[in-house]
Length: 102
Image (cartoon, rainbow, N blue to C red; front, side, top):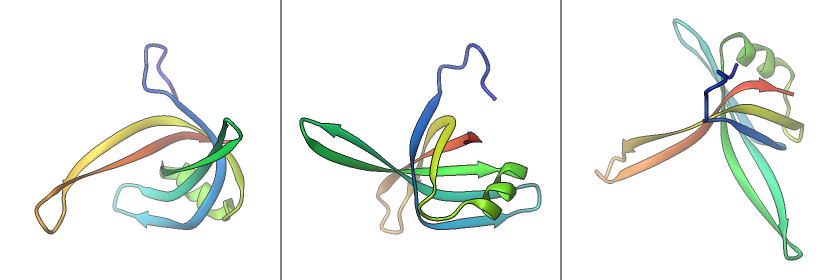
């Protein structure tokens, strides 16, 4: 889970949205899905979509029980990767690597 000195901590509460994708490699299984969170500000509702990744046995268990529309709390860390698109421009992908799902 978290190291005491770990400053990269995320807790999100939201709703599972869309398709969940499972990838099984030689060493581990990865489950990817989107979590939608909602906040209210000045009477307006703002939704954000977050990319979530779960690895290993937790991914296998989550894939078996999670469904679209489920309410969920995710604890984990945030990371951003840079990659090049086919047209040569740089793009960034941000996701939460989940340590626990409640």
